[in-house]
Length: 460
Image: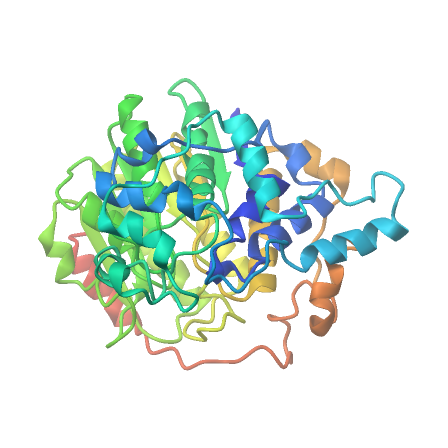
């Protein structure tokens, strides 16, 4: 028996979409598509009110850094934030849908109209006191930040904590950090040693954040904090696998010298590509680090070989109690990076392969990168359906869900977001699709043999 848990709610999705790189829609489109396929009903537990405290973040992050990102002065609409207090235009789509679908169950769920409404709701259920403004010069400078976010009083601290560039301050940052991180941390409460659990937070997987600074759209490293919480619960040996296009540098750094935490990262490694780490040489700088740097054009077949010949043998040799998988989708066909050419079905099959192989492990699946929001909603919905099909097959049979080649996006409040893709579920992967580009795969099969030798993999 495998217990299924997911952290997902309209509140969580609207908060997650405050992150600038989510474009105001990524999480909400994902949740809405999962909901319209009735997938949440198949889970044993659905976490709807995620939150964590300052003390939770301090289990990994530095005191001064946490004091800044949780500063109460950021829990409002900031003067340099161009967004209004009202939430994204998706609310207008929901309202229009409800006007014509007022009868249940087709009516869209309750939504929050303003960002301040989200904060009021968060404060009601979290019972977590706000963090008063830190006493550093940076905290005082919040009052002086100009519309261009360039106040001289705070420039040094912004640079120190990398709260600019790809990690800018944004409205309601503290609520965002506590909600998304809390969603991951609460998964640990459902994981024990007597029963296998598969737990999901598609808004998590913020693998770039470091102990004292933000990086790569990541402000809090929920993965590191989750592993720390699981260790406190008595779990010792864990394996972390990262499928994101970018190297999982923050997680690797945190457990660089740990013999119990194994980190495996498959990522694009080319000159100048962020974060410019994760080489084979970097693997030698720690106790249990296994980097798999890859080149442009990675396809399904090559990824299958890597999983079977490298990833699975390495995990087997570690014999983990828990397997954590970062399911970044920026290597999928249709992503704006256009570096890899993985299909939704191909990447999902590789992930499911790991769940099947390591039957004794509880598994935690987290989100990650992915910058075509309608590709990501399809990916997480499809992967969620595969998990339910494997562990709750009777339920899946009851809803008669199929993803045939000609499958269309079902009618729901955000269906018009898929109009330019002709509402086709497999639009980016269909033969002849204008959006499907065939890239030259610069990865060579001989490289896998090199990795086997480097990591001393011996297959019986």
